[in-house]
Length: 496
Image (cartoon, rainbow, N blue to C red; front, side, top):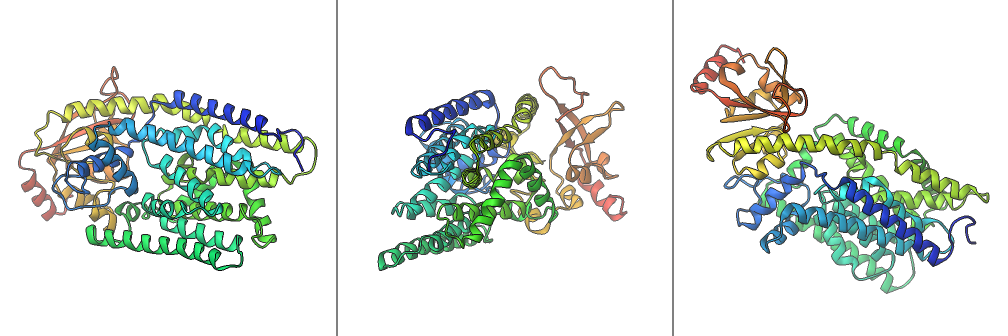
């Protein structure tokens, strides 16, 4: 039964797809200057690997898996080896991955002539958060493409599923879980008699098991732990914090969330006899549980939910397709589209804010470039500043710091390292005191003995902004002569 009020033919659907593509291009142009600071951690790892220094953040250090995207590191390292710029390559591949994912979802669901799921791909491309995360420099575009390719290949019984499953396992720490779930739910919802059917599922499962075992073995051999160091750091957040952040994002997209819940009820009621929607709901639920179990920043603007956003849309559109009434379905789609636009004002406001932070970072980079190369620097913002200054950095947040990753953060322990410089995020107050932004930095710099050990030598602000201005600035503190002896004395007197 064709749906009244929405184009049932290929030409109408293709026109909507082209309009969605135009929207994606428009968002790309508008948000082009954005890049996430965390992405530069991967860039530094990739370039060190390309130059033969191994998987290390600091050249010569013991390997620590301070990234969450092994496949992305390998890809960027390869591109760097052939002379392509890492930063621009990451943005372009991220956008290409999002675009390819949207196209694949559109083509796959268009085969079904009787429902609205074909709109999942176009709506995905129209969402501003899709272009936003594609431009971030993170692996999200690549991962989104791999999720789409695996879903389509598995549902189509393509042999391409085997290499794609292997790539998903390498792409993200949750890759093995997502790949295994895709195989399991696919098996349950497409049960057919015959040896060929059994062989197809069994081979896919073998790829997942062997690929996951090989990756864990590699990690144990190189790093000593079965999961990335980043996981252990992010899992230290309060247990409920990630779920609260995820719930907030789901409320922003309430129409889609409501459709997803109804789709879940339909899948259970029909005992998984909904071939495409059952695995869609299962994958979304698994990804939500995984990302919500770690640091809440993982759900900010649907960060690590973006690869499964088309599946959320498809599930909601499936429910909309079953609604009665001549005008109800088109109206529901419009409401869904409107909900996807909700983050747009915040993203647009974020661009000048991000540009100001980048300006302050570039000024900090210029200042630190004059520091002798043997210097050691402790810093929270581990991305752009270390990438452009090849000093030896210590990560206060803990992504590339095994101690913090596996034993938790301790301000006194971090101070006891006595690096040559601390780079904090904060600002100067009217009385010339320093106000810091992050609690970890405060637990270091607000200690009683800190002024006896370090002096503030620079506050890096955006261009044309006074050093005493409020904002996201970089406060550089230099170790004073004799700091080691004064630290021991303060420690003995319990005055730290």
